[in-house]
Length: 386
Ligand code: NDP
Image 1 (tube, rainbow, N blue to C red):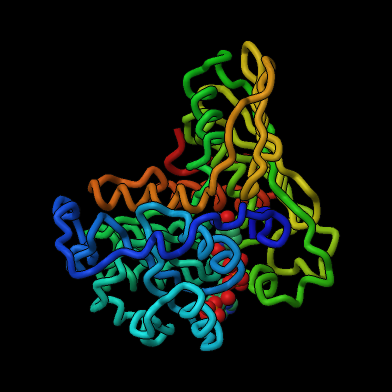
Image 2: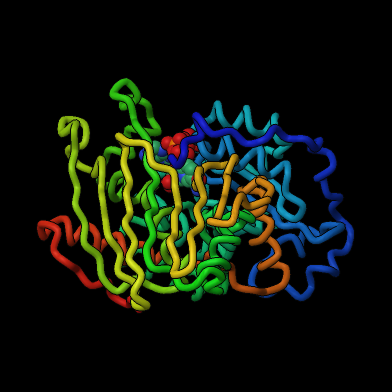
């Protein structure tokens, strides 16, 4: 649930929805160069715009993605897929979505015939990501899938294959890669601005109170089949991502340790994991993630200095500094930036910077971490590392 929608807020919408309304029935010449399916072309929108349908109207869709789609310049919310009729009523009114663009999980495949919908955004529990990404691709739609991409590397491969086979683009909900803060640390690390990165301490975790475990968005997170894992797959994945994009390298091996203070609650998924990543250039990363302890920091020490983001992973309020002083960077609407970037990829026929392969690599590392834990903390090589 990341930083969690409950305690990290996005700036309120400042633009009226009507500003985003596009007139239909006018030639969409600007879309003519787009490759793959682009239904907006058929809909004849008056300017390049990419219609997005959200699948699964839970916390993240309601608290972040719906509001962010009022802040996008290219993407617009044109459809919803939900199993809860009451949510459909609320969303159609709030976002002016026509009844003809509302689907449930049984009618989902009919999106194939809907020219208003270019992108399916899968915001379902992790265990449902693969099925709905594949069904979306088979319906001829581009896909954004939330993190973690799936519950196994094998699922990730089948999602990538389905999108390639159907000539659909696949992108992931890695919102932080679209922030000035994370783009700055990528550059500082990869350009070796302060010398090469020698070590990192990246941690993201928070406390789930016992009293919250009955809530629907927590319940599936405690279920191995639906979540694929615990804190590691939910929020630790951001620390892994950061290690990869700050060094610009793929880890070759991991060691890891897990412990739980509440075995009655965390009997299927991990509560707290500490893990160490070995990068081929010599850097090491200490990672931490938890559903019981608060971590929110990205720290890299280099041969000539250091840099950090703290807080590093929330929806807003990111702050950065180096050994020379504070980073002067603005916070942005992360989800709006992320969706618009994908919209531009579709219009310009480019691959997303957070394409499916990024999610697959993270899952390879996660599987290696779980393998190390199962082996009592032994060093496990990451397939495809280096
Ligand atoms: P929620 O539980 O709040 O929402 C999931 C929604 O999926 C439900 O509300 C429901 O919507 C639908 N759903 C369909 N079938 C099921 C089922 N069997 N059990 C539960 N829900 C079902 O989860 P979140 O919104 O917190 O998370 C959804 C996804 O988004 C996850 O993959 C998560 O990792 C990711 N996420 C990403 C974040 C980021 O910052 N990138 C932040 C938070 C979450 P309906 O009633 O409409 O059918």
